Structure formats: structure tokens, C-alpha cells
Image 1 (cartoon, rainbow, N blue to C red):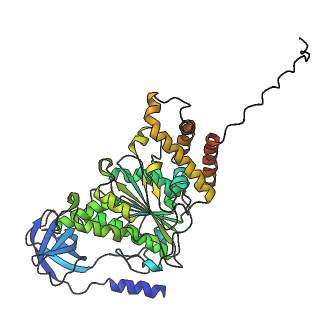
Image 2 (cartoon, rainbow, N blue to C red):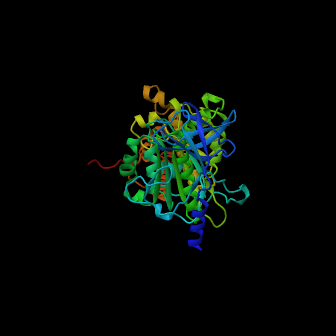
Image 3 (cartoon, rainbow, N blue to C red):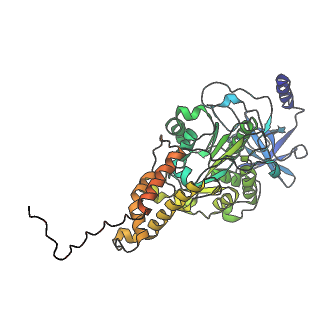
Length: 465
């Protein structure tokens, strides 16, 4: 049956009759083609040919004034008016395989790590699959151990949850993702690097992820210099590969860096197709595609695994209310806020505990763990409220007992929140340490020693030494 399924998948990809048209307009990134408008649909693949006969793969993104609008997957140099365009078949199919673990692939599922060809699975999978129906999905599962103290304690991640990491550039998002990939209890990591700097890809794999993390990971890469279609397709491929392992019964940790660059790619595609720009230049299709992509992560049906999603959002100038960040925050099940000021003080991961929220709480923790977490958050909140006065020396110890407790606990709490890249701490140990910190400053003071009894009148004095 496996062989027959593979043959059927190959037969489905056999090309039928070929139809040709020609380029009549080339404007910016888009080509307008005549002669194929009756043969093409949105999402179909085509090949435009340069003057010297080299093919340039394209995708149909819309129609304008009776012409098909195409966007390329490669540079358009060499294509001009009258260049031949050949209609292809429906795009968006991939055949993942368990042998992809430990490999690095591009947006088309082709190897880019120099380790040879990739094995192909038995079935074609759609890059734009629909998420499981709402009533067929299980609820979020138990807490997923991450080994990161600040996350396990304050912003827990449950199996099947979708969490956003919101930060500016250079605050440590990629390093936090690598820590999750290396230390989490997930069986498979699927990591999509969307619009990344080409220089940073090898650094992420070799320095941050390491051999142990790579061994149970699949990395999909589309660098920032690649066309918008390739960057968008890399995000779709990331979700399709995660769904393949989910359907096989694995617990998958799917990480994407970043959703903002996916939105920027979709903005380029939408504007080239003629969509009107709306909020800050983003066309309506961006806010339609975001939930379609992010809803694919989450709990699976009975008998399947889960896709626990962690998606980074690059906030512009620290504005956490910009359109993409605001839309993503409303879709996901929690958000982690990383603060540049914390990073400048040298505390990594630079997570702002008080601004971060996990919607898995309070059910994700036990009652004792919730009490410990709330006590620590209260101490951090009191210290932050009085931080300026403390630094200026305007606050005097003894003025407020609760503020005194926060000042006493702050050095230990900051040390607890600080964690090195290769360090991993079990959640039980994290709560034990955090509980000790809270207990030391909130325990009632010991009673004063009893006063010595008064000497009775006429009683003999003690002998002199």
C-alpha cells in the first residue's frame, strides 16, 4: 500500500497539455500575461522564460483587466514584453518524511545543507491546509517543560498552546528560540526562519541550536533577500511539516521567526496584485492570512499529536500596538514581551515578567505553584513601582514593609530570572528556588527574646567576679 500511495502521488504531479501566453506588462515585481487567463486560477504555477530561454518560476496572485497577474520566485532579469509564459499545474504540494530530521531545507523543500538529497514521503500534503475543525480539537494539554526558569514559572507553555514572543531587533528572540529547541520536552522541533539575515543562519544553527538541538529539528530557511513568494511559502512549509509529524502522533514544537516578516511578504504580494493599502500600508489580505496560518498550530484531533506554536513578532520601534503585533496578540494564547532595557542591563532572557501573559494560567500550575508565582510577581511589581525613588535615594527603609520586602528580594529574583544559553532547569527545581526567595522575605519576623525578670527588692546580688 505504501508503494501504491507513492505511485499515486507521482501520477498526480504528471503535467498535462501545455498552454502558452506572453508578457504584456512588467511593473515592479509583477508580470501581466495575456493568453492564459482562461487556463489559470489563483495559486497556479507558471514559468516565464527569459530572452535566452531560462525559466523563472512564478505564481498567479490575481487578475487585472482580463490579464493574469504573476509574481516570480526568482529575479526577473532577462524577461521583457512578449516573453513566453507557460501554464503549469496547481502549486503548494509537499511530501515530508521523517528522514528530514536534522536537515535544513529551503522554501521549496529542497536541501540546502550539503548533506545530500531528501527522502520523500508517501503522500502529497497541501502547503495551505485548513486547521482541524474547532469541535474536533482536544483542549490544551499538560505543561510542556522548557527548562527556562522564567517561562516555566511565570509564562508557562502547555502542549497545544500558541505563544507569541514580542520584541524589537537584537533583544534575544533567536537565542530564546534556540533555548526552547534544546531544552524543551517536545519530540520534534520544526523551525521556520522567515526573512532572516543570511549571515545569521549558520550562527543560529551552529552556536545557538547546537548538534543536540539540530538532531531533533527541521529548519526551513528563506532569507531576507529572497522574493516575497519564497518567504511566504517558507512559512506555509513550516506549518505543513509540523502537521505531518502531528498526524504521525508526535508532540511538535513549531517555532517561526518571524511572523512580522511573513506579514511583510504578504504585503508585497497584495500590493503587487493591486490591493489597496490600509492600516500602515498593509492590505486586507495580510489580516486574512495571519489567522489562517496561526490557527493551524494547536491541539490535534484524538489520536494525533499536538503542535505547540511559538511565533516571534518584530515590533517596530518598541510599539506593541502596531497593526501586526495587535492582530497576532488577539489570535494567540499568550504573549512574552522582551524588553531592550532589561537586555541592556545584561539580564537574559530579557523577558518582562509583568507584561507577559500566558492564557494557560491558572490551570497550568498547581495551587502551590500559583501561590509562589503570584507572590514573586507581587514583589517584582512593588519594586518596579518604586524603582525610580529607590535609585534616587528618596525612599527610606522602614517606610513601607511591603516595599522593604521587595527591595530585599530583588537581587535574588533577578538572579533567578537570569539564565545562560546552555543552562536548563527542571520546573520542580525552579519553583523550589522561587518559593525559598519569596518565603525568606515574606515570613513573619521572629518574636523578640523574652526580657529578663526584674530582681525582687532585698534579693542578694550576684557575686562579683
